[in-house]
Figure 1 (tube, rainbow, N blue to C red):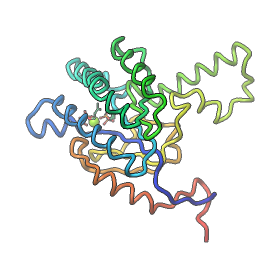
Figure 2 (spheres, rainbow, N blue to C red):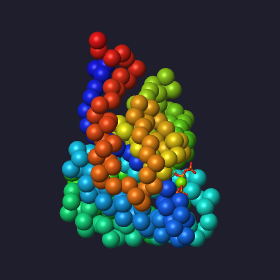
Figure 3 (cartoon, rainbow, N blue to C red):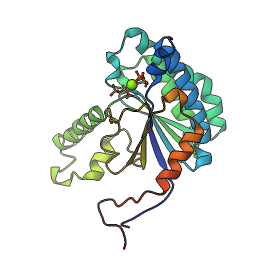
Amino acid sequence: MSSEKRAPQHVAIIMDGNGRWATSRGWPRLVGHRKGAERVKEIVRCAPDLGVKWLTIYAFSTENWKRSTEEVLGLMGLFSRYIEREADRLSAEGVRMRFIGDRSRLDDRLQRLMAGIETRTANNTRLNLTVAINYGGRDEIIRAGRKIACEVAEGRLDPADVTEATVSAMLDTADIPDPDLVIRTSGETRVSNFLLWQAAYAEYEFTETLWPDFSPAELERILSRFGGRDRRFGGVAPA
Ligand code: IPE
Ligand code: IPE
Ligand code: MG
């Protein structure tokens, strides 16, 4: 198919602007992150009603370790609390929760919570929620490259058989379709190492709204604009 108009099945969001939201009010950055976590709950709740089947959110990048210890620990605490407090509701509402990124650097307790909610919600199908924690597109591609190199070194894979499908299957997103639409809040118009491989043909939407002010109504407006876009995937639009 050379042209396709439809509601996005998979929406990925770079949730940015929590810090500015807080500092502009004279508050610590962590207050902005707490407010941001409230927005996540709201967006997760409304996404299935807007036709979204897959929602991937960028919560912590491989570069975010450069922030102060206080901010990093505060964010890690928020991730744990989100999982603990939302587990029952996510399960009841049919949300399947998964994580992408390198977990090995996260503390053991958080890793256990992540694995626990993934198992607990594994049979849910209403919404696929994926949270990117200690995620970087380059890091993910490097880790995939190492896995492929091991397969080749051990004689299980012929280099000539390495295809797009081989690489996709080695990424953290092996079981997740590519995003149709990537939204970034806060007015920044960069990718910041998010889904570099997967978003090859995604549409992008940038909004000035800071993440703590992002609303279901704004998501709905962005989704309806997406419906009008002509996605050609390298082909030509039909006459
Ligand atoms: C996004 O908000 C959340 C994370 C990156 C964890 P920021 O914390 O980047 O907020 P700004 O960009 O400094 O306003
Ligand atoms: C991107 O936001 C990462 C997340 C939203 C988790 P950043 O605020 O870290 O990105 P830069 O520094 O503006 O590129
Ligand atoms: Mg930022």
